[in-house]
Length: 208
Image (cartoon, rainbow, N blue to C red; front, side, top):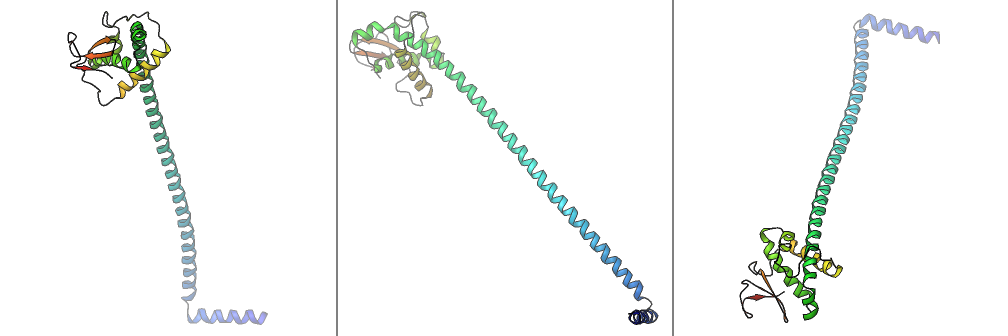
């Protein structure tokens, strides 16, 4: 074993004697390899950190976007609900006034056996007058509709019909008759609308 190390030492001595620059080159090469290896580890670490940062930023941005989107949807839903609730309240008030108007002609309803179509015709008279105003205000006008009184009771049968008609009126896109038909005529043959309160006979009359 000692001979082996001596022989190896002799080879190294001979190599250093013949190629004195070899040690310097070898050490330089080792140093460069170590630096490259160290730099690769640093680069690898930076790359991993950058990826993690990018993923974190992407996740954060997505979470922020989703939160904003959810907030917008919630705000829109609340706004629509507020509008719907407000409009529903208005329609309920209008239906209440209309039901009182129906109650005001109950004697005609019982006497002439008026149908829902007749009451719808009667309601259309008020709808046509309310085209440029508030329906509830129109219905409550003094001495305009037979038997109407603010103190009239609101019967469920009249209210349910009135609410359906009011909802249909608010959502309709095509008018069933000209808004000029603003006068109601209660006859034994049914309720008819006229454009002129003084018109006689069946000319220029409308019925639902």
